[in-house]
Image (spheres, one colour):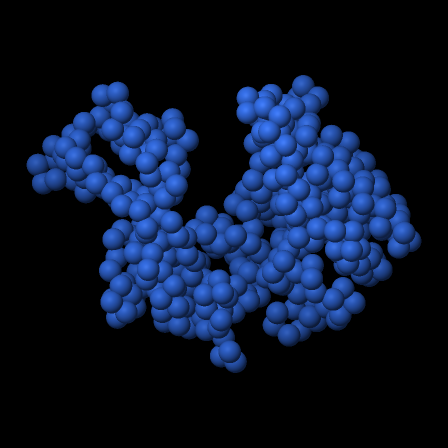
Length: 421
């Protein structure tokens, strides 16, 4: 017997029919003798609709009332899932975040989980009940409903799994696992059997959208094993792992120690719509980088790749970095109107870049990965504008028109193509 937390996303909860299909996955686990808790998202598109209603009511609304409205989407699906499970003969009860309770801070709209009291959930699960918990929400120290912001339901599921001591957390979505790259770009992309927390964290931050960064960070911190699975699979089909053996389908996200063979490169990611900005001849002094990026942070602009080149005399420096295309004009204006916090000779920039990255824990113990990446791109005539690296990833900025070519070339170069495709 295992203790499992299962989470269903918006597409899995999009209608009563979809909810009933998802419930059959839960029934399979219960009939296998497992203790199960469920975390649900709102129906697909419902949260955006609720946000639209709030903005239509008032553009200057109280964030506490925003949360009260937006949190209602998950309450609907949690109640419906509990009703469907009960109809199937499975004892079930829905729990809003405040009923668990899931304690958060008071940052309405983007709250962070502080603590979860597992007492009631633990009691219900031991008694054979299936608690269905609203994702994306909790309760503030002031007793108000809060929402967790982007990726909140995945984060809720991981936090609940950690609180109840689950053996694993199954994230059901509309894809059947984590792939070596986007299968829409590379049809030969392979579904990974296992991927480490660190690799998944890098891939999520670099453009892979299967799991949200916050949920992977929490899973890594609390050692919660995740599986990414498709809710669209037949719930009554034999459970076959990606390697063809009996087991849990999908991709297991786990500690690096659980992965026997570590590939040099596990995946290739792509993030489009990257803008590049360069500040030329910045007067170099202690704190100048803090002043530049502090100016952008004050405007809520997220900076990604950063490269700095200091002149031979040490008096000036060139600083190049990337921001989302959508933030380009805002970033340029903030830098031009910096209030004398720093000086530079001129600013240049462009939109339409793409960040291509290779990721793999095996890069720690293998030299020359970056050099081989650059050669593979050069062989295709692709020019590199920026380079950044970490211990397990190398990223380059290139023209967006070459993005998909670069992904396909690197995927093949590192031997990630599925042979039967």
